[in-house]
Image 1 (cartoon, rainbow, N blue to C red):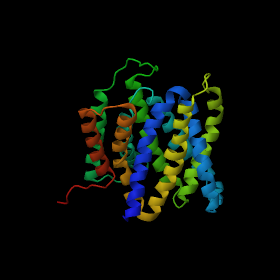
Image 2 (cartoon, helix red, strand yellow):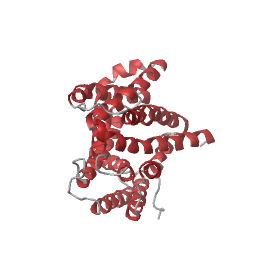
Image 3 (cartoon, helix red, strand yellow):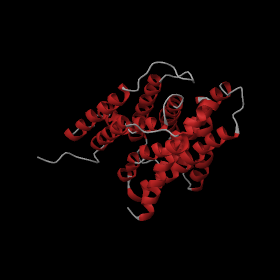
Image 4 (tube, rainbow, N blue to C red):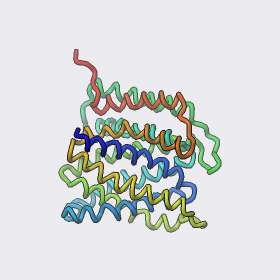
Length: 294
């Protein structure tokens, strides 16, 4: 990578790591439905002009059905589930579970698309699953917290969100090969906003969120979703998808840093160990790390 690409990679890791902090700060005041609507609507407001300026609007019209499916599976559902989890879990813990998305993607590709699993990838799946189980085992308290969500339910929501990401990635591989990535990004956020408009109006909080909550929601939409997608697809264009996916390994560290600076959330030793195990499984299951040849 060039130095400018590395700068963008670390900036993307910082933005996506910050998304868990902003969800944590905004979910209580907005509620999950309203917060996610603000997030995707704001992202669409940034991405659609970029799409049109690039002249890629026709691609969105041609492939709108597949893009709509990706918008629901890859944005609406996981964003809602992570916003529910934010009512019970720390930003750092959510980001660690988020790192399993590539593991679920490899598993879905094997089950659905018949992709062959090498010994390295099978070992990675096993290690990643062990990391998830070990991390969840010590945190799965079923007693609801102050906001009505138990840690166990929050963990289940995180796992459900990452499974959605795995399905969404394979939907894109199956039906959107060759479609301009910006059309998928902008179109999926536009579809997500349209799907959530009615539910968000129905679930809008009776007490209007304050300025701080709005600031968090707008940052989540404009920085952590809109700008982050632009950076992500720039990286894919410059260095390729596999190197751009290295951002997965930066997100938990940034999420822990932001959570510690803003909310004094202290990463625990079991969390750090679980994170290391999950990232090792991710590296093996995605092919970034391979067992030595015999």
